[in-house]
Image (cartoon, rainbow, N blue to C red; front, side, top):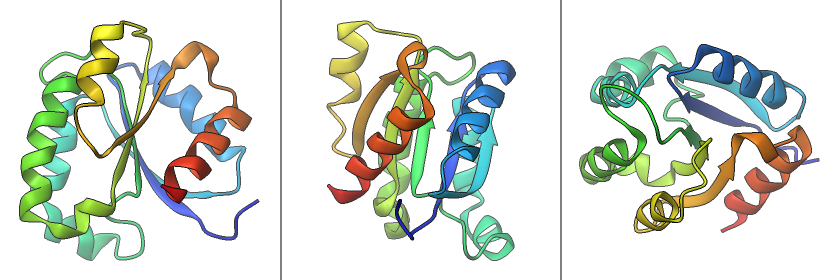
Length: 144
């Protein structure tokens, strides 16, 4: 296990899926703080209030790993990626935030679109992700 601990943001419209992922993340020792957003717009608002969130969570914000669902209302995962790429240009600190797609979509088109962004480092389907698989992917992504 790593001695480093990382803050995480889960962006998913399903409260059940957020809960299940949080449970999996809490079983591994490399996650220390979990932020949540119920859609892409809520997450974008979190980053729009960068200074406020940075002062409220100086050790944990911005999150190092972002788990992002594809299919969500208001702003979906792919739309979030586009907007987030622009926000990263304003806040250099966000360049250390890495995205792991965490979705029920196994669509090759969604995967291809997601990986057009260099900060998307993994694509996991919710059904295949055990705590061990998630930890291994986080370790792999952090080392990149």
